[in-house]
Image (cartoon, rainbow, N blue to C red):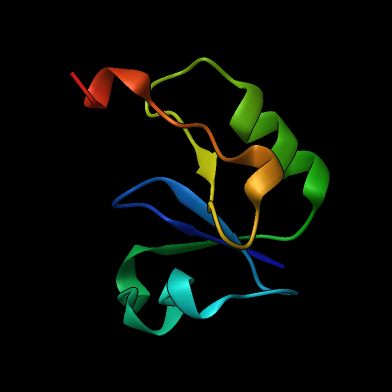
Length: 71
């Protein structure tokens, strides 16, 4: 199962959560559940707004770093 934090549009993998994810601090009213990896891949590959990305700790293969936030 995968959890989506709709405030930040970050997708967390519940089969291998990390301490740095702070999943327990996500409010229950902003959580959306997704059950398949195919849906997660499709959400991460879409160029739609808002852009979904994987968590950098529990889903590093789907993490997208926005270089425009640096400048």
